[in-house]
Length: 64
Image (cartoon, rainbow, N blue to C red; front, side, top):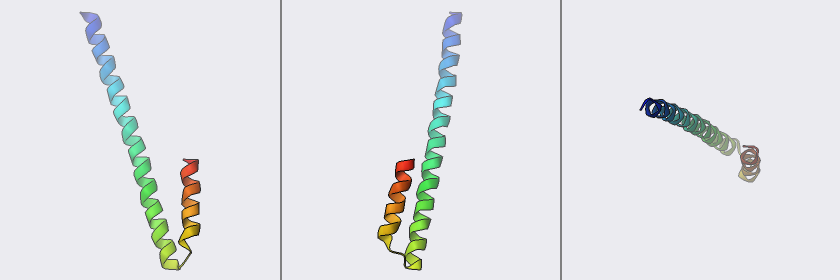
């Protein structure tokens, strides 16, 4: 019976760690997409060709 509580506690800890990891990844992706949006708007306002911006964004995607 005691082993059950130990295993249950370990499962809770692993679930919490997994939840925090997913939250961390979501924050990174959200930050990246918002920065990408700002970059594209800036490029459009400055009159930079969007094709070059898209190439830069694709290269950033590949590094991630």
